[in-house]
Image (cartoon, helix red, strand yellow):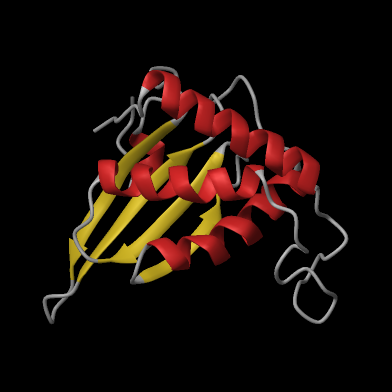
Amino acid sequence: MAKYKVESFNLDHTKVTAPFVRLASRKTGGKGDIVTKFDIRITQPNKEFMGTGELHTLEHLAAESLRDEIDGIIDFSPMGCRTGFYLTLFGDADEAFVASKLLNVFHKIAAWDAPIPGAAPAECGNYRDHDLVAAQKRAAHWVSGITENGFNCYK
């Protein structure tokens, strides 16, 4: 495999098994701040991907709910391939910590019974493209995969 500047391009996507939480990078800034980035894989790469509505809804619900679970979140953003998300935060967290917090969040999403946060025209650039039912099913599937098999971790 060629060596790329983008870390995720160097991951052999044919050798991983979703669901997983993977430490993608850990960087220390000039003033000593640590920033940690995780690959949160929801679907099996090159076999399955999320529809834009469910991905968008999962992004809104998880981005909002994760902030109740983890301090120092910088960003929770979808992957362009629609198989998962990147979670970036301040601090030196590890995969087990992040997986446990995501388990709590995805439990909440699977049972979500309120409006989707940030899904009004004034709050969202594509407010019509949401699918709560599909997001709930996907969250429940992730929870069952993690609960039954533990979370996978790839270096």
